[in-house]
Image (cartoon, rainbow, N blue to C red; front, side, top):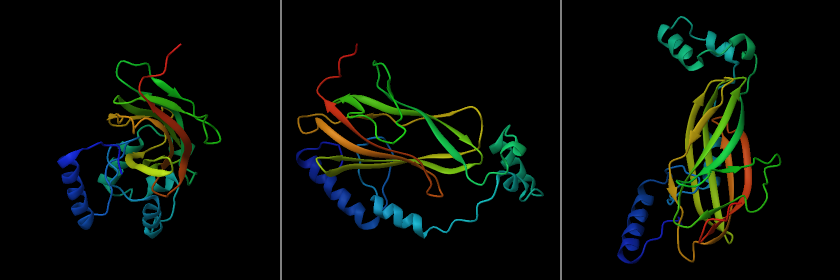
Length: 232
């Protein structure tokens, strides 16, 4: 069940298409903080898939740089990926460290909603409030150190009254360590509207990499209301 509200024949047609697609393709698509499409794998299926992937041994950044050094094309690609990274300074660390520095909700014509990142992963309730039918996007900044992080991705699962209503995932990419933070903005979305869309939601957000290492997990609640909250 997604957030997209459809009525009459449009809903029947969408359901029929979804059922047909499900028979031939069980993989989910899209990745957004709260998308209107929920055709994606469950958390259990993602974990099963992750367990089946055989990852190679971890190596330091220096070892990665030295590998295949006689291959000119690979050497140029690595230099382009690493940029101005000081190999001697970070080359002895096996695991990349990713630190999420900031999270903000952006909505046209509105001040940015800066979300404080809790140390224990459980922010106060509600973490933020959105107006029904409003456009918004999630923007965050993060820093990578020690080693290259491969396949960094964002996942988000949303529940309302105990029922899962949305599951989304977005691949962010592969990043080399650097002092300057990276920034990423999710595609713009629109919150659902109507009496049944308004209310309180619970959600879980994770930032994971190809090694299935979780760099940040946040369990939170948010609300959708008829109007934006008053700003002081």
